[in-house]
Structure formats: structure tokens, C-alpha cells
Image 1 (cartoon, helix red, strand yellow):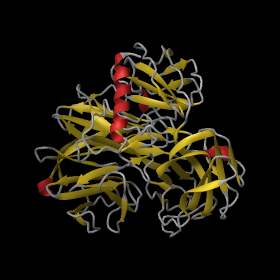
Image 2 (cartoon, one colour):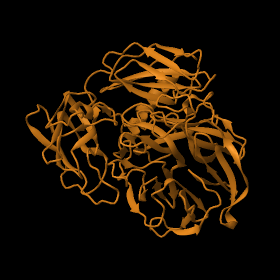
Image 3 (cartoon, rainbow, N blue to C red):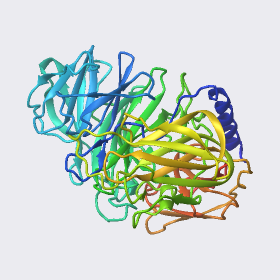
Image 4 (tube, rainbow, N blue to C red):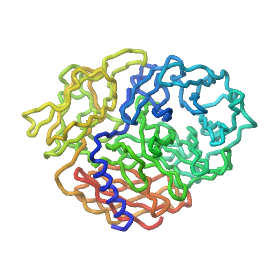
Length: 568
């Protein structure tokens, strides 16, 4: 194990010890009341998120939400419906100027709203008919009080920017400038397609601006919200309207693997303690391309001024810090491993095409469905040996729900039991009287239990059939971690250096692998989680940029850091 890996590994262990006294954790996608769409296709949606800290309270705004959420701690969110804001529109943006919050979205009316107390739905129209008809707007107030506006959502047109006049109700000052063009020949992750392989421009969209140490970081998303490779890149400048220089570690926010994918079109913000975070769009995109969720990831600027997001184990439980952290060296990973992957399952019944094993295959895009939504339908997982269980995430799939946003319904109600032998059951979670609509119900047990079998039993569904895209069990096994992945063969495509193929010898007993890579040997902050294979294709690299790689093996018992490669 090289020196840097050793330092990182033991700093993570130290961090787990320090944070182990805290019980507050979260698990992506965020545990929110994702709303059904209005078209009756039975899918839920929230995307293009902005988290905004205002007077000590975090506010979360997202597309098609019917309102917004607020929280004191980034963990427990309360929903505030809004009858005033255009929350049926896409890509909201907010900014504070003096003591006033301003809100705008991608809407035909082009109105700008304001409030001095967003805990109340008392927003007022500040300006009608903003002079630019825009998609994916982003407001940014500089330290000197000047205000800038960024926008764009197209596979042809660039990301644009212009200064606004806050003294004249945000009139534009000067002519909008071209800031970010499409560059798929150089930037592989911008190319359209599930594997960046469609040979055409993706959609550059979702602009967001941060200022750090006097420099301006203009962020944008590509190649499309429906793809697993959806991520956020960044350009940097000494001035708010450029010229901008591409940061070659882009996309800095990237999550193409694991249970749920995507980490694009988001916003970067600072919490109460001075930590940076990136909140982003995650994709399901089965019933509709806009079937999406929201994820929260730590972010940081390194000593060289590069912006990084950390999505490693990004859909496993994470601990929320209550102090200033060094996210470059300290991990928020709770240390609870996934116990349920591909374990034997049984079910009361299964709908054709939705077999029981699809609830434990770590793919949100397919699911188990019972034949009915009747009380008593159940799914059981056998962990194959007794394990320590700390938490669960129950992701409901809404099979045949067919509900619309305007319909009132009773949310999922269920109980979970556990057993040592599969015959004698004890109660574990009782949500038979649940009144809170959450689609990805993350449940931390008040006290860890030892269990081999777990069973979820339906009491009622909102509509349709009882169905799960994930019955995920987190905790610790009692065996050994997998051996070290000591060598990784990297084949960088000579004809197209935006693509690389990685292969390694399978580690005995490994559940999966976390593949780390980066453009600097000391900055392996990109990551891809994979299960059940010892190879990975990386299609979204930057042309002519050297990359370094490391493969960590993991299983129910823990993680074994791998050995780093040389440059490719």
C-alpha cells in the first residue's frame, strides 16, 4: 500500500471513530416526497436542484416539485407547497441580494419572484417579462454587489452569460456573451449517449457559478439527464464573464455506477460550517426520460484551486458532519456495507418480467413487483449468514400506480421483520400506519440487530402493485475483506484517447469494486462503482490528458484499497 493510500485509509478509519458517536446519516437518493407527474404515466420527478442557505436554514428547490423543502441540518427535510412560485417549471435558481431571496425558473412568463421569508409562501413578483427568454437560468451575486446571469440548455447553442442591473429590476447590461461551447472531440463525457457513443453533441445545460479565492467557477451539465453518465464539469476564469478555461478534471461530479446513477445539473453551495457540497440530479429514466431523483455529495477545492466532488459509495449511508471537514482527506462513509446484493430471495408472488431477485440486484432501473397491491404481499431476503444490520433503504417502484400529481393518496404502509432461521420472526420496522410519502425510505435502526433473514410485508400501496426497485440492507458481515487488487491493465484507445478499457484479476470474495481515477497521481477523486465484473469501460475521458487509476475491492466485511497505476 503506497503512502498516500495508507494516509487516506487510516484517516477514514479515524474519521469513522470520531463520527461514530453521531447517529445522523443519509443515503442517496435523498429521502424526499418525490411527486408524481401530471401526465398520468406513474413516474415521479424532482431534478435540477438548488440548495440555498438563508438565515441559518437550508432551502431545496427542484424542478416539477410543486413547492420546495427546508431543513436545519441537510438531513430532515420538510416540504413547503407553493401556490405562487412556478414550481411546475424546470431548473429553478435562487440568489440572496442583501436580505432578499430572488427566484426564477425556466418558464414562459419569465417572471422573477422575491421573498424575505421563504418559510412562508408569501412570494411576490419582482419583475414580469425578464428581457431574455431563457432555459436553465442561474443568478449569481458577486462580492462587490454586481449581479450576473448564466443560462443555456442545448445540443447546439452555448452556455451564455450577461451582467444584470439590480437597481433596474435586473435589466441586462450589455450583450450576452458566449462562455461555454460544445467540445465533444476533446471532452468525451460531453458526447451524447449512455456510453458517450452516439457521435453527436450532448446537451450542455444547467449552468451554476461559484467564486472561490477570487476565481470564478462556471459549472455545467452534459450530455443528457436521461443517461447514467450525466455529470457536471467546470470552467474557470479570473472574471465573472470570462474568458474561461476548461478544468481538465471535468466532470468533477460524476456517478455512472452503483444502485442509482447520475450526478449532473446541480449546484455547489457552502454549509453552516464552511464545507462545500454538490447537490445534483440522479437518473432513473425508465417510464420517462425525466424520471429523476436528487443526490447530495461532499465537494471541495484543493490547494491548486481545482473543484472536486466525491461520489464514492455515493448511494451507501453517509454521516452528516457537524464541523468543518477536510473532504480531500476525510471520508463521510458510515462504514456500513451492503449485505443484500444478489442474495437469495423469496416472494409471495411475482409479476411477469419483475422477478423477486430484481429487488436486490443494485439496479434502480428494474424492480420486483408482486402480482397485486393487496395487504400481505411480501418479499424475503436471505443474507446467507448472520450479519449486523444497521440500516435499510426501501425503494418503491410504483408498478401500475398511474397516479397524477393532483391526486391525494395514502403512502406506502408496511412492516419489516427479521429472523435468525427464517421461521421465527421478530418485528424490526413498523410503518403500518405511515402517513409520509417517501419513495426511497431510508431507515436507520435505533439499535443494530443480528439477523440472517429480513422480510418486508405490505399493508397498503398508494395504487397499483406492491413493488420494490431496491430492498437494500446495510451493516457488517463477520468475515474477511477481499484481497488487494494489485495490478490493473489499462488500455487507452490509441485512436480515441477519450476512451479506456480497464481489466484486473478478480479479488476472491469481492462483492464489487470502486474504481478511482484522476488526472493527477495524488487526486484520484473520480470514481465508478461496479458489481459482478472485473473490467470497466471508461468512455468519458478528456483527450490528451493523462489519467491514473486504482481499484479498491469491497464486500460485506469492508474495503481493501488497491494499488495505484502509473499514468496512461
